[in-house]
Image (cartoon, rainbow, N blue to C red; front, side, top):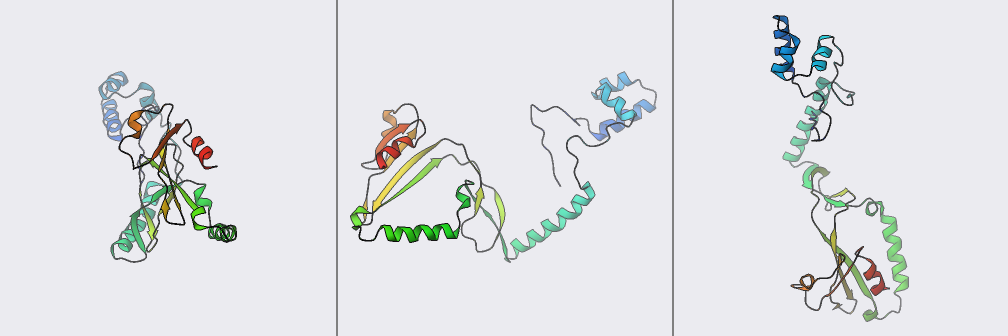
Length: 221
């Protein structure tokens, strides 16, 4: 079953419970005035009049295709089945997934194979010390991970999600001759402060740019 949570600044629809309406209708039938009932139960006058005239009887918001009874009949067997499969160690498992962007999710096995074929031809005859592997890692606050259902045995669990969080980039490079170059740190900021360079890795270099990547492109290329 779905439970809707109203936003704080949203227009207040359906804020009066059915129990309040039943008590208000009972008092109206006993001879109380509408004004008295509205003030006592804090029900808007227009809302009470619509109830008496049997107008706007549906739930507020977009109407669901299935009724509450039909939805419950569909959801309960699914939850029972998933609980049984994950509990008895069958084909499904309940684990946390990591977030990746939509662009990264577009990659496939053919694209990766083509890349390594081209790389093998390009590196033919190149000395190991001239071959440098460059990698970038973003350090950012975690936007949150959710539990999901996956087929048992999957190693990497990904959720496609574009994030706009501010992050710090760590640039690492190593040559094929087993030589690790110093870490290059680029802050996404307007100014470079002395505190940004304290406590980092040995021989690390630091810089900053508005986008966080412009300086890196100039240094690398």
